[in-house]
Length: 361
Image 1 (spheres, rainbow, N blue to C red):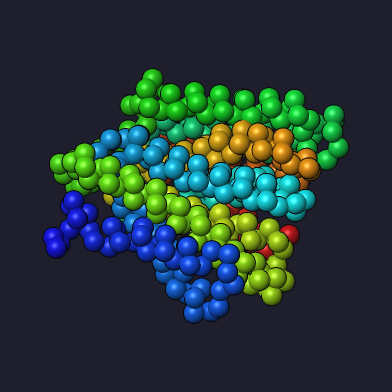
Image 2: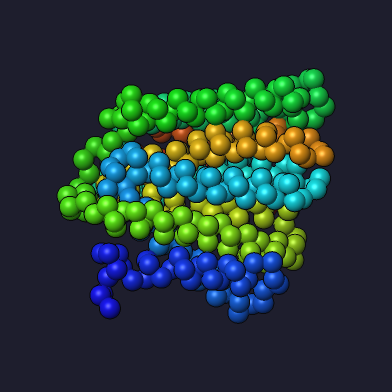
């Protein structure tokens, strides 16, 4: 038996299969304490393996295609999970898409961005990134977030934070179209705007993997991501019970699940920042938030035709204030082209405020 299969570490090859077996054995069952701990370890291994396979793919196809692969793969699986839960659930799931999208935006724009800025600044002083790439991403994110999460709270045709079928259809088409234009600009029209500034990453000069290794990593990445999302869903009842025992609001469950699902992207973004490739981190984080809105809203709009209850998309006032503050601070950060420890600390503080107000509204 060779030490490495197709040049891949053995644990990266084994982790996807182990996560699939664990998911098959644990899904839909009540889990005890030792089993929860074991499932959590398998989940962590699947996350690390997903990051490794994503980096193999990124090294083969180059930036920004590599970051786009991981962001799209996670978002497609996450969106499928949301739609399945909404179709299987009742009235309690009408706000699931809104809560998930909002949690993703807050986690990415404050948590992931703050960690990457802090790691990059601590290791490299004042890391730089391309303003011509980051500001368009933030502009698209602000437009999509306002259109889908804020405006439904102010429309008057329907009561509450809902949209009419025509309004929902327009929001879905606009979201998908704007995200499609962004992907075209990122990968074709202005691809150089999203390339790293030439950080000192020794792995970037290594020879690219063979096609067989790349396709193997693609397959194993998909298996890993299914395992990550499925195991996160499997752990949800235990998390929900822990939240109830602690007396915290139900919204905390959605936050915890979103944190688990975003783990592969968070780890990959932090590792890129540590290698002085902050632009790659920003591509991955902001691209993930854009993909979540651009793909989730059209999917839930289509699924709403089969739901007995209207979708709740509009955010409450407190969440709107947090979103506005986050976009304002992100705008000030991403238009500078350089970052220090201070910017990372500000974003992490906003993330702490978001988590605290989710638990203590």
